[in-house]
Length: 119
Image (cartoon, rainbow, N blue to C red; front, side):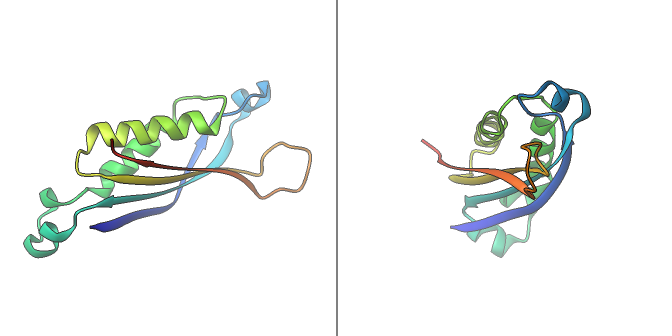
């Protein structure tokens, strides 16, 4: 097994329960870690034998573009789509952070973290 990590994927999205969040948007950070078998690609040196991190990034960006009230909801969509599109992924750890959230305090970020295994 092996791990592929995409760290600090930055998006501007419109998630949140407040009406102004839907209108003005906010900055987000996504951190993604997947488990997969890297043995074949480590010997063949072929992209087709591994998980393409360009595709992982594309999935994250596409799902972050779809508005959700809750970070948990967008996180679940990202995980579901990765498992659907990339059969070799066996485990996902995902963190979605809203930077400078409008919660009436000096808070750098609010983060949800989810971990799922392929059934």
